Figure (cartoon, rainbow, N blue to C red):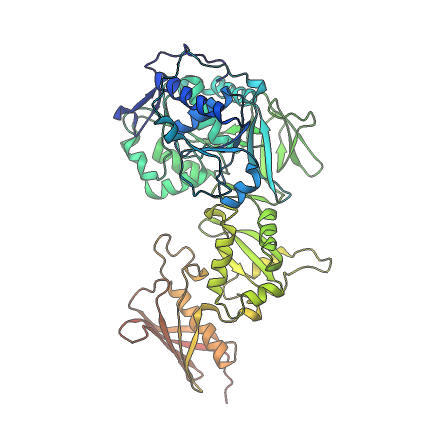
Amino acid sequence: MSSINKKSRDIYDVICYEGIWSDGIYKTWNDFLKETSVLRKNIESAGCDRWFLYCEDCWHFLLAFTALLQCKKEIILSVNISPAYIAEIKGDANFLTDQIYPINNIYEKTFLIPSILSEKSHEDINKFPKITGNKTSIVLFTSGSTGTPKAIKQRLTELENDNAFILSMWGEDLLVRKFCSTVNHHHIYGLLFSILLPFTAGIPFRRQRIHVPEEFYNFIDTEYTIITVPAFLKRGVEILTPNDFFSKSPWIFVSGGVLDSGLAGKTGEIFGFWPIEIYGSTETSGIAWRQSNNGIEWTPFDNVQLDQNDEGCLIIRSPYIKNPAGFETADTAELLDDGRFILKGRIDSVVKIEEKRISLVEMEARIIQSGFACDAYVIPMESNRQYLAAVIVLNNKGKERFDNTEVHNINKFWREYLLNYFENVVIPKKWRYPEEIPADIQGKKNRKAIFRLFSEGNEQVNPYLRKYHNVKLIEKKENSIILEFSLHGTSHYYDGHFPGFPVLPAVAQVDLVVRFASEHFGINIGISKINRIKFLNIIRPENPLVLFIESDKKNIVFKYSSPGGEIVYSSGVMTISRGFPNN
C-alpha cells in the first residue's frame, strides 16, 4: 500500500466484487481512485488528527483506511463497538463509519461514508498522495490482562512486512484465487488477511463478509481463498456435507483460536483442503503456522525468534514488536530441537469465546463497577460450545435492588448491563449468586469449588433471591403439592437442547420434580427407578406450567400441564430410593 500510486493498476482492474465472482458486480481501480479522493476532501476539511474507523462494508473500509493514511491521520480500530466501550477509547477522535448510530455524545462528530460518497464531486483523481509506511499510526484495541482495554499501536510498515512474508510462502497459489472472508476486519487477523493482503497483492476480495456457512454452496464458479475462524468452521461442518460443490478446491486460512485435528479433518473432507492455521495475536501479529494433518507442531515464521520465560511461556521477538526484549505471551509451549514448537495452553485470564478475545478480569471489574456487587468471578465453561459463567456476590445495595426479584430478571439485568461493554457472544450464559465466593484458607479463589456451583441441581442461590423460576405454590397437602411456574429461556435446563429452538429435555423435567418434591416434603429424595413416563407435548421457554406431585413414600407420581389443564405435557411414576422414613 505504501508503494502504490495512481498508475499502479489499470483503471479497469477489479479490486472488489459483490456476491460471487461470476456475478460480475465489481469495484475497479478507477472507482478506488475516485472514491478515496472524495473521502480525502472531507477528512482534510474536518481538521482532526485521530479517527475511529468502523465499517461493515469491506470496500468502504479499504477506501476510508487508505484515505486516512494518505491524510496522515491516526486510525483507531476496535471490534467491540458497544457504546460504553467506545466512550472509553475514542477520546476526541472523529468517527468515520458506514453505519447509522443514534446522535449522542458518544457518536458526535460522526461522518457517514455512504453520504459522503453520494456527494456530487469532481475531485482530481490524478492526485494520489503517497503513504509513508513508517510514519503511520494504526491503533488496535484488545483485552488487557489488567482488566482495561489495551491499545496496540502499529505502523503500516509492520503490517506490510507480515503480508510480504505470507506472499513469499504461498503467493503462487493465492494469486490465482479470489478472496472471501468470514472474519471481522477490525481485528489484526481480519485486517491483514481479508483486506490488506489481497489489496496489496492485486487479488480481488469480496465486499461483504460471509455470515452463514450455507453461502459456501454458491462458491462454485472459480477458485477462492477463504479467511475464517474455528468457530465458523465448526458451524459449517455441522451443516455442510462432502460433495462436489467444491470441485474447484479452495484454500483456507484459519486463526483466532485453536483448531482441533478432528474439526480440521472434517473441514478437509467437506472443502477438499486441510486448513492452514495461523498462530498470532494483536500484540505480535503472525508468529507461526501449521497444517495439522502433518502434525501438531507449529513452524515459526522466518522473521520470528522464540524464547521462554521461567514459567515456560513463549517470548516472541520479531520486526513487528518494538521492544528488544520481545513480547511475553501467556501461552506455554515446548520448544523442539528443529525450531518448531508445541503449544501447551494459556495461563492468564484472557480467553477466547467463539474466537472473541475477552479479559475475565475486565468483565469482573465491570460487574463490581455497577455498584451492586462486592465480588465477582467469571470462568470459561464448555458444553457443546465454550461459554462464560459468572458468580456474583451482591453488596447491600444489590440486595436491596434485587429483593424479591425473580432470578431470571436478575440475570437479565446483568446481561443488559454487560452489553454496554461487551459483545453479545461473550456475555455469561450462567449465573450464580452465593453469599461468598468459595476460597481456600489463604483467601485464593477455589476454582474447583466454583465449578461445582454450576453442577446440575446446585444453584447456590443467595437467600435474598429464593424466588427463582417464578414458582407459586397453588396447593399443599401432606402427600401432594401443586405448583405453577415457568422457565426463562436462559435457564441452564435448556442448555444445548436445542440451539435456536429450546425445548425442556426429559432429564430436566425429572430433575425439577425431584427438586420440588425434596424442597416441599422437607427431605432429600432419590430416585431408583422410572416406572413409567409419557412425554406428550414439548415445553418451550415461558410456557406457563402447572406441576402436580404426589407421593406415597414409595413412589412419586407427577404431571405437567397448562394452567387450565387443556394441555398435558408429561406424566409419570418413579420409585423412591431414599428420603421418606419407613413409619
